[in-house]
Amino acid sequence: RNGVQFKVLAVSQRVRGEEHPDTLVSMGNLALTLSGMGHFSAARAMQEQLLAIHLRVLGEAHPDTLSNMSNLGLTQVAMGDHVAARDTQTHELDLSHLVLGEKHPHILTSMNNLAATLRAMGDLPALRAMQGQVLALSHRTLGPEHPNTVSALGNLLLLLDEAKDEVSIEATAMLYPATLAKFVAEHTGPTDE
Image (cartoon, rainbow, N blue to C red):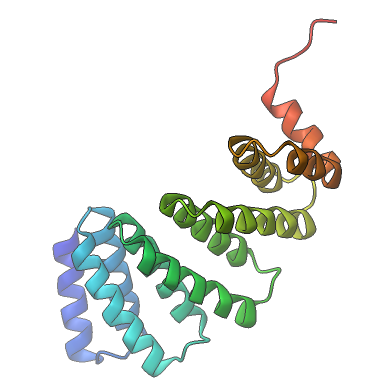
């Protein structure tokens, strides 16, 4: 499959030029294919090249640029380059807040990606703060019983439990009672009364 994508990209670059939107889409698709096949170095190089073009042509605040940054961050994580991934994901999240606004669904995805990177790095204080932000934003934008909000609560409670932080567990439970009830209902079996 990637052989065809390389050919499509080469033709698009020759006929339309390196900066044409269709060429950029072809380049992004090929980079995702390479990453999906485990060819992370090649994917990263292509994503970095694509990001440079996006920055030059579309600017930092364009949604396609943000999407490319997000993909690059995921590839950096897959390569084990967590520091670069954290930096890329933090920058992308900051820009996404400015460009898309807090309520855009992409924001929660970006926050969760960064949280996963922070966990992989073992940066528990930053992870705890990020998971608290994910929960608060999910609760505010999706509602207390939305599956993503319930999952965010579960992630935060697990982290607090690992840290043996009973005070924060109780405070979190008091802040999000409806979400906690949904979480408990989903994670316990029926009672025999």
